[in-house]
Structures are given as C-alpha cells and as structure tokens.
Image (cartoon, rainbow, N blue to C red; front, top):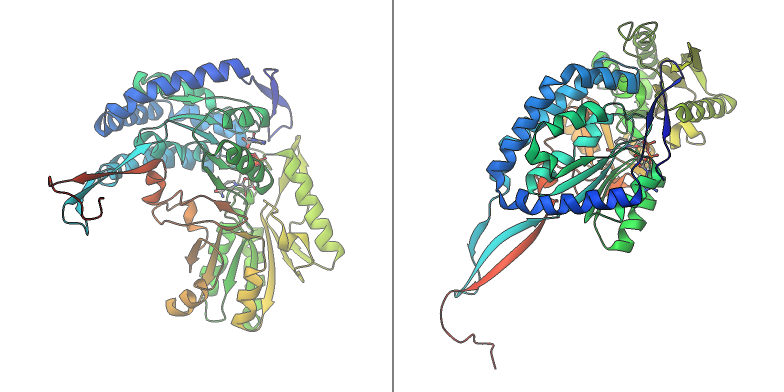
Length: 469
Ligand code: NAD
C-alpha cells in the first residue's frame, strides 16, 4: 500500500513527481488523532473555527505563488490555476461570513402548548473528502471549508494524477496549529480512497460515475452518508430568438474552459434550425481563434490534456463520430507536442445520439452541434442522457428560457449564459440522475449537510400529559 506512485507531467509526458500513500496503520492512527482533535474543535465554538480558517486564509495567501506554481505543474495551464487559488481564498472568506447565520440553534413553540422545541445540530466527527484531478485544489477544498466550519474534522485525499499542490497546502495547514489537529491531506490512489471510507463518518466524493458507485456501495456497507458529485454531459439549448454572438461566446467558454476537462462543460449543443448554419459558422470562427498554451503556459488558454488516459477516450469518441458521419469544422484530433497531449477546440456537426460524443462524457474541448425544429424535440434531446448535472438555455426572452429550464432534468440551469456554477456557488442544486446524490454542495445546504439535526423536546409545565396512562 505505501509503495510510491509516479506522477506524469501533462506538459512533458515525463514522470517528475512521486507520492507515497500512507500505510493502513498510519492512516488509522491519523484518523484517530483527528477524531480527538475534533472534540475540542467543535466545543471551541464557531468564532474560534472562523478565526482558524481566517489564519489559514492568510497562510494560503502567503503561499499563493507556490500553490499556483504547483497547480501549473499539475495541470499544465496557468489562468485556471490562478483562478483556483483565488476562488479558494474567496470561498474561505464567503463561508466565514455566512456561517454564523446558518449555524444558529432555534427555540420554537410547538402545537403542544407545554412542549418547547430546541432545534440544534451536531457535526459528523470525521469527514473524508476524495477529489479528482481536473480542478485539483478547488475540488479538494469546496466541501472541506463548510465541513470544517460545521465543526467536523476532515481527511482529504486528492487525485493521484495532480497531487503536487498538496505540499504547499500542507505547509499552509501546518502554519495554523488549531487547524492541523483537525485537518489532514493524504496522498494516494484508489486504495487509499477505499481505506479512507472505512475510517470516516461521512464521505464527500467528486469523480466518475463508475467510482462513485463503488464509493456509494462502500459507504452503504458502513451506513454512512455519501455525498456524490459525479460526471456530466451538459446540454445547451439555443432558440432561434437567442442572441447569436452572446450564445456562441458563452457556449465556447462553457465548453472549452479548462480544456473541456470540467464536469459542467457544455458537451452537447442543440440549435434551432433557422439559425443553425450561422451559429456553426460563428462558433467555428471563435473556436479557431483560441490558441494552445504551447510553447509556453502564456501562449493561449487551451492547456494540455491532464490525464493521459483521457486522451484515449477523446480519440475513441472522435473516431466513433467521424466513422458515423460527423463533420469536423476545426480541431478534431489529439496532437502531441514535447510529450504533452493537446486537443484544440473541435466543432462537430452531422452528429446524433448514436455517437459516443453525444452520449458519454468526453471531458474535452469538443462542441458537437445538432439542429432541432421544435422546442419539444430540443427538450427531449437534452433529457436523453444518463446524466443530469447542469444545462444552459439561450432565448430572446427570459420566460421562454425558463419554460424550457423547468423541463430539463438537471440541477443547475444557466440562462443566457453557460456553466455558471463554475463561478457562482450560491444556488442550491441537486445533481439529477447518474450525476450525483446526497444534497447540494452549494448554497446554505452545503454547510447544513455536515450537521445532523438534533431536537430537544422540552416539557415546560409540571403537568400530566393527556396521553399518559
Ligand atoms: P475518478 O473517479 O477516477 O477518481 C476520483 C477520485 O477517486 C480520485 O482521488 C481517485 O484516487 C479516487 N478513487 C478511485 N477509486 C476509488 C475507490 N474505489 N474508492 C475510493 N476512492 C477511489 O475520477 P477522475 O478521473 O479523477 O475525475 C474525473 C471525473 O470526475 C469526471 O467524470 C468528472 O465529470 C467528475 N467530476 C465531477 C464533478 C462534480 O462536481 N459533479 C466535478 C469535477 C469532476
């Protein structure tokens, strides 16, 4: 179990980093220590926890450059790495400001005049967080911040594919002793993740549907909750009344940001027949203008494919689509530069739902565009998926867009914009279908789900209850 794991650099294809997973004994001891620390963390109260997280925010700020540098090495892209660190800092700030109002006990009168209800909640002692490689820091910490504020201790196991950021993150944790006693970041792969589930009281998992099913089964065996954030195949529906310039720019961003390696990427585009040709022309022109982040990270916004295994998926999806008649307007293949694997934004037409590129998660900057003639047809196509993470609707009027949004089987719908949950975490949303399970990771519910509600039912008068014997 504690054999070192080699880590590939996405820009060079070379192994230039190693991680060592903890042994089962080490992980067990670490979890026991965190459990001990959690009692004091919870009892110290919210103000003390906020102070610790604010100290952490300062420690992260001091290591901002090292964190960005590590993320650039992990992912091969620059602007999203900067965004990851800055949104992590902003998220710490936002949660520290919101938590006091969300974590208050309440006193209520009840329908029974001599019984008062004191509503409180207690945190899960130890939460396990297992995260993927596509936004290494953001997804390792998105559930962590509310869990810590709720009073939980936590163990985070980031992906073995992009783990370099762990070192500066651990240094920032070590700078805050109160935090160090309740938070550990461990490195490792599937086996470490599986071991972690055996130790914790709740698990937050972000990753593929296939692994999510295994995590859910392991959590069910232990009767602990599993909060699952899984894959997606987000559709965009564009009505004939939509602003073409706005729709093409928004969809291009929503599909191509982070080189399409995002659960909430737009991966299917349904466009009303009267504007189809103009839409494809404009989208292709805009897509062709985007440059690779090669030869330097500053050269353009399109980073390398981070996980080499994903390049095989992309190649298979493209080959399947082309063999079944798809037309490639730009991009269309994996390119190898200096050992890194790259995919330029790829616009496809003549696509249909017999193709993998329209049904399975591609996780690439690929924009397959299909036309529709009626709104009913567009809704049926958008819903014809095992996934239901998020979606986008573009229309000339908000009511027309909302009428479609209401019928889409997805938890977050961007209206006249795309992939807004990447930048806005305020709205509560549930993943539909195979995209996830277990309550919203955004909005107020994201904090409350780390607490188990507890009710004190208080008799207020020394009288006999009418239902007693
Ligand atoms: P993955 O499922 O291969 O791995 C995710 C994590 O699970 C890694 O840390 C891995 O080491 C760990 N793991 C693997 N097997 C395990 C097991 N049996 N038990 C416990 N842990 C185990 O996913 P990935 O390839 O790293 O990430 C890409 C996937 O993540 C895509 O499907 C993407 O859509 C999804 N994703 C979802 C969201 C969301 O919010 N819904 C966000 C980002 C990514």
